[in-house]
Amino acid sequence: MMNLNLSLLLRLLDASEVYTDMQKAAIRAKLDTVSDVKKTELQAILENEQKVKTEYFKKLVVIRKKAAQKKMRIMYQTAEASSDKEEEKELSNLDYQLAHL
Amino acid sequence: MKQLDFLTSDIHQNWLWNVKDVNVPQNPEQENEKPDDSKDPLKESQDAEEEAKKLEDPKKKENVEGGEAGKADLGKVEGNVKNVGDLKEVEYKSVNGRTVEVDVSEKNAAEATREAHRDERQEAARAKAELAKEMKLHSEEAPETEEPKNPELAKVEKEQTGEEEKAKGEEEKDMAGVQENADTWLKESGVENQDTGVGTNVG
Image (tube, rainbow over all chains, first blue to last red):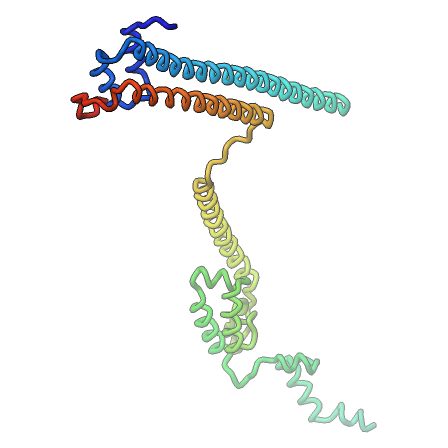
């Protein structure tokens, strides 16, 4: 069972997106009339909301980092291949010129 | 003998003298081309000159050299004079009471060619400028195309989009559960049914 932390509960309520602003105001106004068990339940719900959001953003970070690394690798390989091709072409031209001197 | 008589006869001698004097061409076909003596060649030349002056504006002058409109104009002139060549290249002068043809074709042709070439160059430059202007306009109008992407990069981006959408779907599913719990809590806590005294949206 989670420990009730009133300060944390109020901060979680402020950041919450599951309640409308009117609902949040009503909760704040009547929080004194709510039992500690219910307050603890509310804290658990709001903490879970933040956990879901955090997980989602963490997933996004992993996905994007991975994609960025892949892109960088591809771009590097492409640039290298292009450079090789250019050098090869240049060498071929030089060979041709030498052969026809 | 009859032939000899004819050759020595006065009629034949007169005929020979006349032939020498007027220089009548012996070829019957050429004879047909002989200017009609009944017409005044000078007058004919003046008429032709006037006709030519009418066509003298630069555009028409250029056309005389071979343009479509020029051909039409030439056709008109041809109707009035015997030969287009006469119109452009021959001048008639009176020498010792006789009308003599003076060939000015080379002089006229050279001048006309120079002018035609100059006009052609100017026209070509104008056309080129117009074309360049039009091409520039079209290039400005054309929508900017994106630089073709590396297919591997595109594949990575597609994968990334797919994974992000999948994560978003999972998040929405989880949030739906959170929302359901939050709504339930609101009902069970009795806060929703109480008169809170809050009448406005504070957000």
